[in-house]
Length: 259
Image (tube, rainbow, N blue to C red; front, side, top):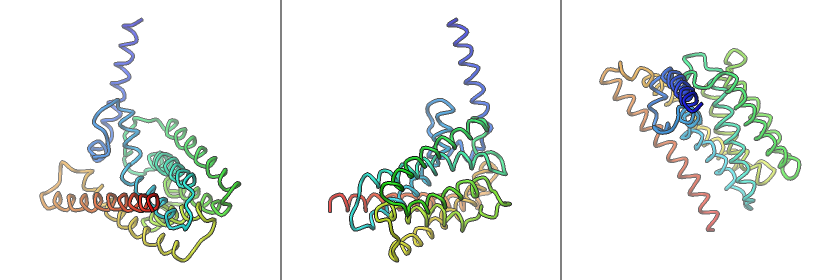
C-alpha cells in the first residue's frame, strides 16, 4: 500500500509538472511566482497576480482613507471582498476566458477554475451583502457594477466589447477607490470621484505597459537586443507603478492609524 501511494503521488506530480510546463515562460518566470512548493501551489499563487491584485486592494484602502471617520472593520471587509472578487475569482475567470494560450497551462481544470471563481465570488458577496443590509446600502451599486465586469471583462463577453484598457481602468481602478469611500460613508463626493479618476489613470498606465511587456515576455527566448531592452523598460514601469501604489496605500493607512 505504501509503495502504491508513493507511485500515485509520483504520477500526480509528473502530471502536474507536465501541465505546468504547458504554461508559457512569461508566467513561470514571473517574480511573483514562488520557486518552491508543489506545482498547484505555485500556480495558485501565480494566478493571483499579486502585484496587480495588491494595487487594487490599495485602491480600496486609499478610497477608505479619504473618509473623515474610519470604520476599521469596513476597511478590512472591503480588502477581503476585493481579494476574493478580483484576486481569486476574476483571475480564475480570466484563465477560463483567455482567447490566446492559457496563461497557466492546464494545471487547473476548467471545472476547478469555475469552482474557485464561484466559491470566491459567493464568499465576497456574502460579506458585501452583510454590510449593504446593515450599514451601507449604496455599496450595492458597486457590487452590481463589479459583478458585471468580473464576467464581462474576464470572460470577454459581448464580443470582447468590455475587454478593453479603458474598461479595465474603470472597473479595477476607478470603482475600487469609490467602493472604499462608499464603504465608509455610504455616499459619493466630488473628492472621491477625483481620487478615483486619478487611480483609474494609474490603472490605465499599468494595463498599457503590461500588454506589450507580456507580448515580449511570451517570446523571451527569441528577442533581439533592442526588444529585450524595451521589455526591461516596461518591467521597470510596472514594478515602480505597483510598488508606488502599494506604498501610497500603506502610507495613508499608517497616517490614519497614528493620526
